[in-house]
Length: 149
Image (cartoon, rainbow, N blue to C red; front, side, top):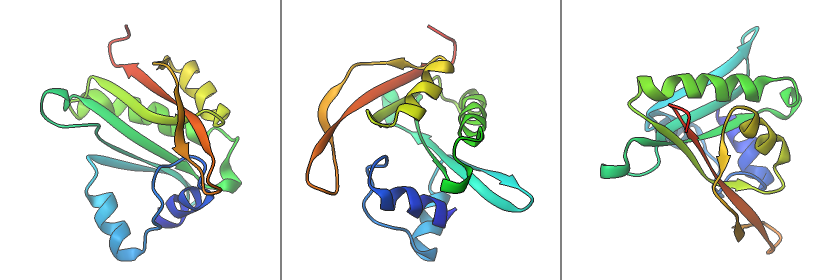
């Protein structure tokens, strides 16, 4: 899980995190989530997701998630399986909504997947994602309602 997470973070084009995980920080990070799942094929981890509240208190019923698929497994449906699995977990974990705060606009594969599963774009935040080269890219907050809407 840590190596796949670090692969995505290291590319600097999808996750807001900048620090890579090591064994200790990775164990703490994944253990602190509401739920984590992995996609495995013949004992090889192909991808993962984390699920947790997007905020606290009166908006604690809104979840947030992050998905990471190893480079070699992209384009093979692993991401779709992870997202679908996470959607099934929402009501089991007390969530009614799944909100992505910062889908990077150039991540068209993710945007297409999310839309095919019923997610709605909430708008665009211009230059909301700071890239490693000092430039900025738009982000698209996105939402999924457990009961449709």
